[in-house]
Each structure stands twice: as structure tokens, then as C-alpha cells.
Length: 623
Image (cartoon, rainbow, N blue to C red):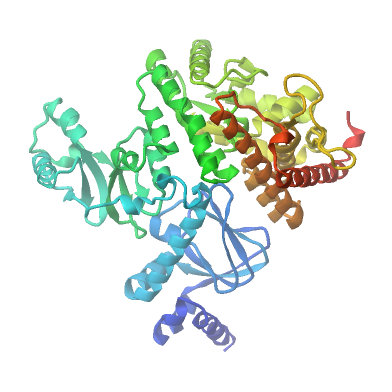
């Protein structure tokens, strides 16, 4: 009897919330017996990003937040909200995380039952289709500029799919596939196994894999197709689709609808035709250059792109991501050219970005910051090959407008080019003996992101850091002391303190005095909490959720960071317009009274946060 009462309560609960409320009574009555019940504590994950999910999660009580891959808050749900439909329809692993922000009771509907309800009840299916579109839009909102901005930053792939899918079945011959391509006037053809995308064949495949190889055109097209190709979503931005294609050196991208069915194919030509004077065209142009000189010519357009984005009123965060994406494209292309000259690597390796580019926060006036993680199987000859690679790439990046790091934080320095196990031992030593040099260099390593090569090497090193850092209290205290050492340029009476001498006399160093302290504050809190995020905004949000930083302070720091970054980009844009070299030194004479007032407020927020950090870690007792 008690069980029947409980099942009836679950049925009544579902009946009060969409989309279950629209189900027929007999279907609704049968659902509670098919659903599990789970208790999730505050701070625990219902669904983890990168993990597989096989249930629709319905909150019976409590609340949960959804974050995308960059840690951006996409959605927040309370009792009656449901999560997990994206993985159930688009496949695992999950690209979102769902975290309980209160203790939760969660009803779990198995994926087979979910799919059955979607097939049999159009309103149920339409509800989750709309939910998926909404959350996807939220996840990519950080890449979009204002309505006056560049078209490719606002255009979705759906808008580029201009014709129905052209396909053949897996039993078709190469000759039949070529005839379909000729009749339909297309340069690629999808190969279908029932409703499943089995592969893609392109006109290039017909030339290189059939004609040049002397293959009989009457054999099955599956013999020459690219099986299980990389795919995109119709909900993705054109910007994201093009970067995915250029990074993998592919020219045709099959795109799937929200149900996982092929919706068409987009090509690099489709994407680049949108608008040539934009960052995505620049990234695509970089990726196809045949030599370093071509990459350098393409990269030289970046300052003008930034100027245009500033004039279109894009946010500092938006622009930082665009500049970072172009920097990634330059580095990947140079690495590709280097490997073409030097030959294939002797063992797997991962080339990683460090600093602002690792955090997706790069602006103009930046130098090189990179490192290499090499597979432990490397021998002496292999180490020599990687040394040659580092020298080749670093020299090429100088020619592309990225000067060498004055602090020698580059893969050319053996300290920043190590096998994985040496990286682990070095970091363990830094944690155990936090000398000033160890604190300086290890803090750079914590802002690391893979750019090229075997990403699992980076993932393993990152996992070691996340496991070791929270327990290294003495080390974190030294790191906190460093974070508090970069004083904002704010005087006793909140007047702006200017550089007193040198070429930058009477200016504000807005990076060192404002942006850098926020980066370092967020880094300390993130490491102490075991937060994997690298982006500063994402770190602040994560430590706010963990209760390490209060809601108000986290919001203030986020807003201060955005404002300071925007002022810097406005300054650099003006320098580009005047034909001057870009830097981080802003003259108060060039600022409005509004900007000066808010700069003082931003610097005051940073100073207050530094003082709180110092008290928490008692940094006055370390030297």
C-alpha cells in the first residue's frame, strides 16, 4: 500500500510539470514504476561533462545548474526541470555538466523509455527539442557579438544548409555514387546504412582513391569512403564549424539535426563565403597557407579584426576568444609545416599554450608562451628531434608577429620541453619546496591548454595537478602572496597612480595592475578547490559555486575583469587605428570621466579581493 501511495505521488508530480502533463493518463500512470530515484547532495554532479549518460534526470526537489565546456552557466533548473536529453538524442559523452546547487531528489527515466515517449508523443518530443536548442544557444552565446557584429559570429550552420541530403546506401558501387554526384552537382556524398551515417565520399576521394589508385569503379563505395566521419550540429555557429574543419584539415562537414540524423553537408567554401572580413575567414586563411610567409601575411590582419570587433561593441571576453582562436590557428599551421619539414614525430607529444592564450583571454601586444609534453618512451635522438621542432616553430612564430617570451617560457627552453614523468616530478618538487622561482614558473603551468598533438598527455598532467594542488597548503600560501603582490594603481585617496618614469611615464599599466591580479586570485582559489577550469571567468564561477568566494565578490571580480579588459582593448584599437605598436599602458588623458570613475571602482574591487585572500592564507607570515 505504501508503495502504491508513493507511486501515485510521483505520478501526480509528473502530471504537474511539462512535458509529462501532456501525456495520456494511462501512459503517465505507468511511468513511475519505470523510473528510479536518486538522492544527490549539494555540490555533486548529476551529469558530468565527458561522461556517458543513459537517463533523463527529472528533479523531484532541489535545484541544479548546467554549465558548458568552458564553465559558462547555460541553464538553472528547479523542481520539475529535467536534464540529459541532449546526450540521449545526440550521443555520449556529455558536453555539459549538471551540478546540484541544493540537495536534490532525482527521478531517473531510462533512455529506452525516453526514446519511446519521443517516438509516440509529438508534444513530448517537441518539448525536449526546444529545450536542446535553448541550451545550445546559451552554450555558444559567449562567442557572439552584438547585432551589428560580424555575420559569421551570429550565423548558425542550419542557415547554411541549402539543400536536401544527397546520399547513397552502403551497397551502392563507386560508379553509382559518382553518377549521383554528377547528376546532383555536388562535391560530396553521404553514405547511409539505414538511418545511420556510415561515411562520406568526396570528389577528391574519387580522384585519389579510385582513379589514381586504379580501383574498379564497380566495387562498393564503402571501400573508398571515409568511414564514421567527423560531424557537426545544425545548431553550432559557423565560427565553430569552420574552426573544427580547419583544425582537422577537412573540407566537407556532415551536419546532424537534433535527432542525430544527417541534415546536409557544409563546406569550407560555404563558410568562408559568408564574410571575408571576419576572424573566421582569417583563421581559415591561416590554415591553408603553404608556407610561413603566407601564415605571417594572414596573421598580420589580426589587429584590424580586433579593431573592427571593438567598434562593433563586442565584449572583452568575446574578443579574447577570437584572438585566441586565431593564435591557435597560426600555431597549429606552423606546427604542421614544421612536421612536414622535419618528418613525423618519433613519439607522441602535445604542444600546449600557456598564459593568456591558454585561458582564452589573449589580446594584442602578446608574446609567445608555450611548452611541450613528450611521451615517456622518447630516447635521446627523439629529444633532439623535439628540440629542432621547438626552434623551428618558435622562429616561425616570430616571423608571424609573435615575439619571443622575454622570460624564456617557450618550448625552446628544455625546462618547458619534457617527457610527462619529468613534468610530474618537477611539479611535485615545486609543490613540496615552494621557492620564489618554483612559484613563478609553476603558476604558468597551471594555465595550460592543449593546441596540437596527443591531448591525453596534457590530460594526465592536468589530472596530477588537480589531485596534488589542494593539499599543498604551503605552496598555495606562497601563490596567494604572489597574487597579492601586484598592487592595483590606486592611491590612498583612490586617485590613480601613474608610472613615474620611462617611456610609459604618466600611464596606467592596466594588465599588471588590474587584469593580472584577477587572473592570479581566480587561479589560487581554483587550485585550492580542485577546479579544472582555466579561463578566469569560468574559475570565478566555479569557486563561487563551491562557496569559496561569495556571490557578490565573484560577480564584482567578473565585472571588473570585463571592464578592465574592455578598456585595454579600446586602447589597443586606438593604437591600431593610429598605426602605433600596441601595449597595455593606458593614459588617463585618453579616458572619459566615466571610464576613470569605473577604473577606480574596478581597482578597488581587486584590492579588496587581494586583502581577503591575504587574510585567508596569512601571507604576511611567508617570505
